[in-house]
Image (tube, rainbow, N blue to C red; front, side):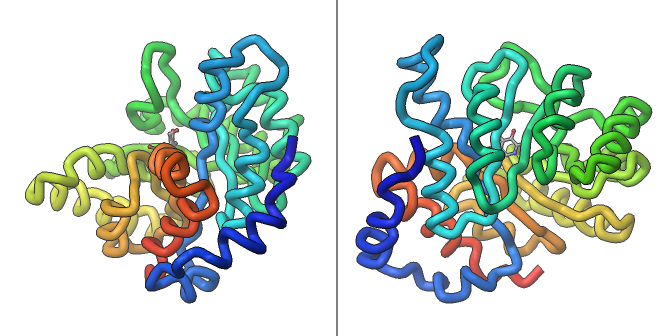
Length: 275
Ligand code: PXP
């Protein structure tokens, strides 16, 4: 099932929506939004685990995000297949028109899968079965050899590589050593500290320092985890960001205001970023 109502949606609901203050700048905003649609699949699996179909459909959701202006779609194919299924990513690859970012663990099975799928980019993340969502960053510094091998394989297949890491010097330097195209800075600790001014400033400073270092070392910078329309505002102070990957808050807002408007609301909050 695709977003069969997307044309109607664009023609009616989006046009009727109040335009966020910065929305006119969103189209040319240098900061891109990748929407993580795992959470749509989480809802489907809660009811239809083991079935081939079921709703809501993450591919339809991805098409709606694109129609609302998202610059890319992110999906995490976890080893335990708790939300996104193989068939979802195969359909995403076939149907989306922006960029597909496949989040995955660095395992031989996932590497083989990615080389066949050919996403535009992979983001290597740590995976623990017990965790609710990706909880820590990848220990890039502790796995340089293995990550370098995967990075080389992906680059040979013209797939870009991003490493999801905490904003620490040794991890950023390892990412450069590995040859990753991107790092994705883990914004979870910043988001967690957001209500406490002093702590959040410490976390923000870590992000700024890591982004500067990555830029100096020639690694491009994405960020994500725990971001919402409130806390994304202070990320305007973090330099060199290319893309934010955001899932939970957008899907949560979608329940109240609809998926397209939730994507547009986030684009409005990100607009005006000057790098
Ligand atoms: N980036 C990475 C690497 C993630 O693992 C996740 C969570 O799936 C996200 C971004 C999005 O986080 P959230 O759902 O909290 O916006």
